[in-house]
Amino acid sequence: MTYDQAKEKLEKFGQEHLLKYYTELEEGQKEALLTQIDETDFSAVDACKHMEEIGQKGKISPLKCMELPEIEAEKERFRAIGLEAIKAGKVGAVLLAGGMGTRLGSDDPKGMYNIGLTKDMYIFERLICNMMDVVNEAGAWIPLFIMTSDKNQVATEKFLREHAFFGYSADYVWFFKQDMAPASDYNGKVYLEQKGVISTSPNGNGGWYASMEKGGVRKIAQDLGVEWLNVFAVDNVLQRIADPVFVGATIDRDCAVGAKVVRKNAPDEKVGVICLEDGRPSIVEYYELTDELMNTKDEKGDPAYNFGVILNYLFRDKDLKDMLDNDRLPLHVVEKKIPCLDEEGNPVKPEKPNGYKYERLVLDMIHELDSCLPFEVVRNREFAPIKNKTGIDSVESARALLQENGVEL
Ligand code: UTP
Image (cartoon, rainbow, N blue to C red):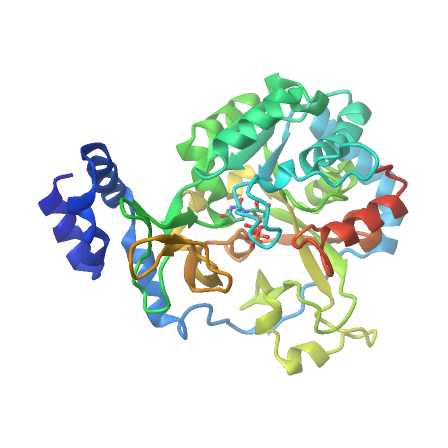
């Protein structure tokens, strides 16, 4: 892209200021900036001007969840169905590791965080240990697809290779990268991170399937005969991955997606709640849950919206075709701390949020599907997310939960 073409593109989106320092740049930097302008989709930034229209929900009603007693009664049958699918190579796992982990505050990818106390115990290692339980039980490797981003691809791959994938077979691991989206101030002006570099951040975990396609690994999964994809977050160190009982239950109930859920520990707990929206499966975020919904009771007198998602979903591949068009999913405008330039053009790392990032989220995929099985898991056995260093959902709380489950740290 030439300078004039870049200027023209930027003018269309009101982002001409991104060329402010162009004349100060060296030749290579100029070229890199023009390429970045060419490749960046600035239309997403418009979303911050229509925030009130975004995320308008339809009519919410309860979605029945498969609760623990029901699972217990059919556990062995579900397990047999799940193991059969895993042994036949029909189940793949997708690790969402493209996030920035800003709340944890480490410069390294989150999975490289060492949560050990008396020995090294990396988050990635913990997840692989959890997968190995199933690999050993099934006597079969589960293809593992790892999503990274431009910001952490090199470090993630290097770290996992250096640690020989913590015992996982390298023949069953593939990496793919998600796209980046521009980050802006509160008025929708995209920030520069350096004089010749636009501030960008990973475009949210909702693009995983489209990015699998773009990265060529969707084809690999299909060629391997994978029919189900267990998508999971990098930060829940207790979660069961490709859990045969969960896989078996979702297959048995013939659902397009299974969602692991936990019983909420308080009506106002900050988790997305599974429900129906206009008759289709959906998730209401905690900040969208009105008092009326929070206080609605089911026929047993329990809260009707009582199960929170934990970012562990089992998607049926054949139902995901429409998701290749990422734009179907709504854009979320998220307030974040964005590295940028100060008035004098010096790079700064802000202490407080200073603008918006634009993301698509995996939870919105649920609403695009016809059927969903919410599958209850015991919270203290399967939910130990690491979002922060201390306090709620932190390294500290996750360590305590791991120890409660007999994991030596
Ligand atoms: P979070 O929403 O907790 O975001 O991600 P994060 O980036 O890890 O952390 P903060 O908000 O900056 O502190 C939930 C899961 O989705 C993945 C994360 O890696 C994590 O597994 N994710 C998030 C992506 O893969 N890509 C993204 O763009 C965002």
